[in-house]
Structures are given as C-alpha cells and as structure tokens.
Image 1 (cartoon, rainbow, N blue to C red):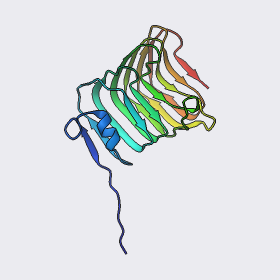
Image 2 (tube, rainbow, N blue to C red):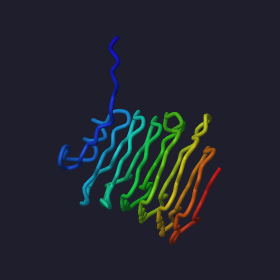
Image 3 (cartoon, helix red, strand yellow):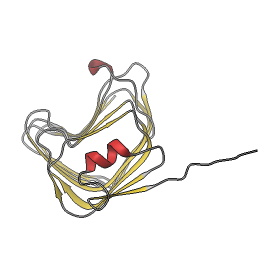
Length: 178
C-alpha cells in the first residue's frame, strides 16, 4: 500500500519567481507565497485557487488598475501588503460575483494591510452572488478612500468578521454591507 501526501511549498518573490503573479500562477493548494519587501507594479489575479496564503511582509503593490482580483477561489489569505490604487473602479481588493460571471468565494481572509484608494473606488469590494460569499475575516487593516471612495463595500456576504480595522478618510461612505 502506497500512501502519499502533498506538503505546502513556500514560493518566494523575487528569489524563486520574478513577479507575484508568476508565483500565484504556479501556486498549488496550501502553498504560501512569501513576497519580499519592495515595490511591485502589478495587477494581481487569483483565479480558481484554493488554500493560498499571500504574505506581503510590507511589500507595496502599485497596480495600474485593481490590486488583487479574486475569482472562483476559496480559502485565500492576503496579509501585510500596502496597496495603492488610483482611478475609477480601481479597487484595492475586488472579489468577483455573478455580474461578471463568477461564483462565490468563501473563507477569504484580509489581514494587516494598508489600502489607499485615490479615486471613485473601494478599498475592499465584494460583488453580488446568489450563492453568497461566506466565512470571511477582514481584520486589522487600515483603509483610506478619499475622493468619492468607499472603504469597504460588501454584497451578498454572510458570516463575516470585520474587526479592528481603521477606516480612515472616505470620500463617500466608510462601510456598505448587505
């Protein structure tokens, strides 16, 4: 009888992978993506991934549009990043839903990030789904969204812990939750 197991790997950026997106694309279930402190000009897409931890170590993400896009993925953790976006709908973290053809995403953890939004956008935005997003933790983040921005905007979400966040300046409202 052969019994095998899969162990989690640590993917280091930029030591093992030159970009964060390259590491995300290579990641398997239960992997940890460890990002060195630096500036990264990337728009990151996490699609159809499970059980991935992205550890930013204070890395600064400066996307041209949206910082993190999460679609059809579960058990994703994003922590210790600084995310700086500018523009209309240039969200810090965007979780897709049915209006754009995606299913719900469960067990999302967003922890210890600094999110600065300069434009009519949201720091964290969860799109609508008929099978709601569930079991999220949004903890210990600092979010600023002046200039018509919204700090946290969540739709069709259930069993979410929003705790110990600092919602700084907002150009619209600080929290939308339904």
